[in-house]
Image (cartoon, rainbow, N blue to C red; front, side, top):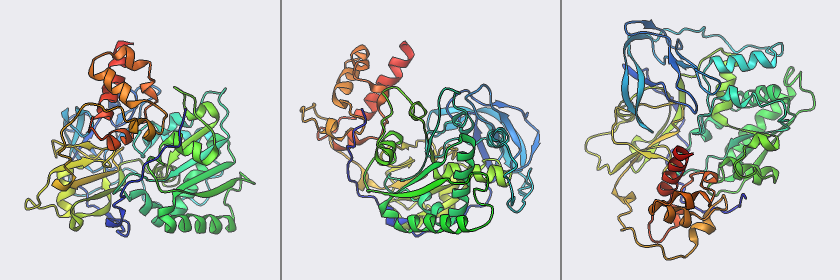
Length: 448
C-alpha cells in the first residue's frame, strides 16, 4: 500500500537554484561504462585504436532491456577494460582520449519544424537509437517503457518535475531554461503511448518553474502546429507540496491521480507512465535534433558555495575533472563526496569514476554533515514505520537482515521499498536501515 507519509527536510536549494546552466568543455578523456542502465550490458561495436566522433555509437543494446552507448567526445579508443564505476565499484568500460576537436557524428541542425509525419514506431526507434534511459536515477531504457504489452492500456502520462532531494536543482534549471523543449518532448511520448492526459508535477518551492512551464504551454497552444495530430490533448501543471519523497514514482501517482500501484507491480499495470523532465528533454533532442544522449545537466553543490553550479557535462567525464572545472581546491576541508542527493546518493571513494547517464548531482560535503553518532539498539519507537512512504516496516526488515534471516525479511515486502532513505533519516538509534533493506533485497534475489 502506498502511504502519503512524508518528511520535511532542509532543502539547501538556494545554493544553486539561481545558477544558470553552464556547458563544461569536453574533457581530455572519458570513461564510458557498459553498465549505465537497468538490464543487460551494452556490447562494444568499436575496438581499441578506433577513431570516433562525438555522438558515435560505441556500444549496442544487447537484448530487449538494454541501451545503446555513444561517445561523448571525438578522439581515439585507447582501451576497453575494467574501470571505476560510481555506483557498483567497477565495470567494463570504453575509454576514449580526446583529439581536442569535438567533431560531431550528427548534424548540428535547427530543430525540425514538422515531425508530425513520424509514426509511433519511428519515434521509438529514434529514442532507442539515441540510448535514452530514465534520467531521474532509475536509468530504465525509455524505448522499453514506451513499448508496453498490448494488454496494458496506458491512459495517463506524468512528467516528474518534483526534484525533492535536497541540494539538487538541475531539473529546476532545465524547466526554467528549456520549458518549450520539455513540453514538446512530453507531447512526443504522449503520441507514442496514445494518451491525451499529461500531468506535469512540480513542487511548490519552484513557483518560477511552474510559471515557466505554464507560459510555454500557453504559447505553444497558441502557435500553429502544436499537437496538430493530437487535438484535444489535456496537458496541465500541478503544484505539489514541498516534502520528501514527493518525487517517488508511486507517491507521485498517488498524489496526482489518487491511484495506487499494486505491491510488486509497475505504473503501467494501472495505465500510467512516469518520466522525469530531463528524460523527456532528451527525447525531444533525439527526435527533433537526432542527437544521441551523451551529455546531461547535473548539480554541483554541498558545503562549499564557491564551487556550486548547474552544469551541462559530458557523460564519462571523471568526477575529479568536473570538480576541478568548478574550482575545487585541495585546501577545502572535505569530509565526503557523494554522487546524487544526500538521501539516495552514493559516497565516492575514487574520483576517477565517471559521470554516468543516471547522475543527477555531485555533492562536496564538509564534516558538518558527518553524523558521528554511534549505532544503538532499536527502541521500537516506530518512527521508521510512520515515515515510510511505501507503508512498510523498515525496522523489521532491518532486524531480520541483521540476523541474516532473509526468509523472514522477505515476508515484510522489501521489494516495495523505494530506497528513499527516510527510515534511516528519522531513526533515533542511527540504524542504517536503508543499507540493511538493500542487503535483504540483494540476498533474497540471489536465492530466488
